[in-house]
Structures are given as structure tokens and as C-alpha cells.
Length: 105
Image 1 (tube, rainbow, N blue to C red):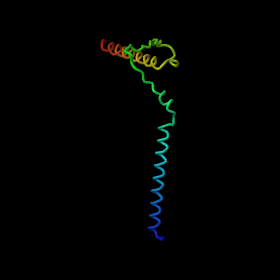
Image 2 (cartoon, one colour):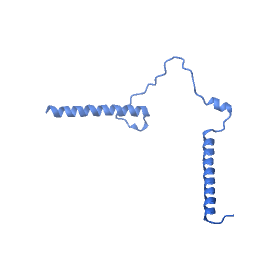
Image 3 (tube, helix red, strand yellow):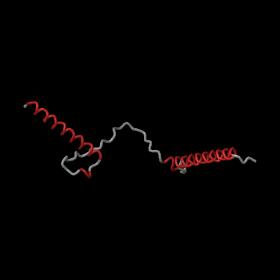
Image 4 (cartoon, rainbow, N blue to C red):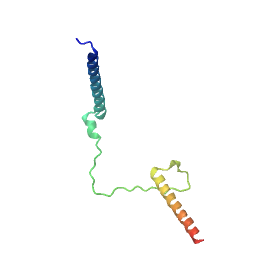
């Protein structure tokens, strides 16, 4: 039986290798379990939302045009985007008018 420093190095590297293999195996097992939840077959099939397109035109949602002077806290995302775009266009027009009036002086 070995008792010198080489014995400690060998047993230490063996233990380290075993610990690394067990850690990697545990992490892989946890990821696999999280990625593939155990659901019955009936539930797996009902999760699909595939529908055939019958050729009819999709419904267009009509959004109300937001008043630019109203409080924006309760607006929908589409309304906020439209409001921001309108305000940017208004700002560009004002900047253009301001630059044009300076050149005319």
C-alpha cells in the first residue's frame, strides 16, 4: 500500500474526477427533466395550435387613434407606438420649419 505524496495525488485526482463526473451527470439529469415534463399523451396532443388556412383574409383589428394630449398611462402598446410616431413626425416638421425660417432671414 502506498503512503507517499504520489498516493495522495492519485487519490485526490481520482476523487476530483469522480466529483466532476457526478456533478455533470446531475446537471444533465436536471436539465433533461426540466426540458421534457411528464405529461399524458392526451395533453401533449392538445397543446398544438396548428390550424389550416382556408384562404380567407385575416381579420384586421381597428385601433382607435389616440388623442396626443391625453394621459398615456392606460394606452395599449400599439397606441403608444402610434402616438410616439406621430409626435416624432410633428417634431421633425417643427424642426424643419424652424431651420427653414432661420435660412429665410
